[in-house]
Length: 229
Image (cartoon, rainbow, N blue to C red; front, side, top):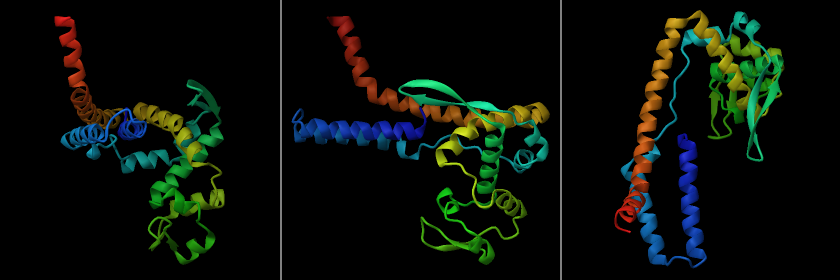
């Protein structure tokens, strides 16, 4: 369970508490007590500070990812989706994976939000300026970024991928990339994996503390029933 899922579950608990109060299953006083206890746990364990393990690709990794040598090794693959509660594998072509790679590279080279890219046009490139949809402020774009210009020219301002498809295609693409990188740059890749593993262990430790804190009274009650009843 990552931090986004954890936050969603916490919101589900809040919604459930609200529903119980609205349905008159608990009193207003009891609702306030539960909400206070929940927020205290969140504050004590600093749930808001949880982050997914984030590891930025190195400059060398970005160079390899954008190289024609790696692109030639990309093969058709599968990505997983959940339909009606069942995990399924769906095929994705080599061309779609390359398109997803170029989309990812473009966003990485420019730092542009996807929402802003969707509104990008030739005028923005000519004047080297675009108004951010989120902040409603202008900022400079692309100046001196030849790689970004080449990608734009290749796809004529449209990658033909929705946000969902981009996320789905990136998973098999990056799996292929890291397999390739490990094979050709083994020592550097091992150091990279160690960094990911360390941050993942740190997140898992905080998550385990949270659930122990939440379910400790329940565990103690269950244990007492086993001993005395």
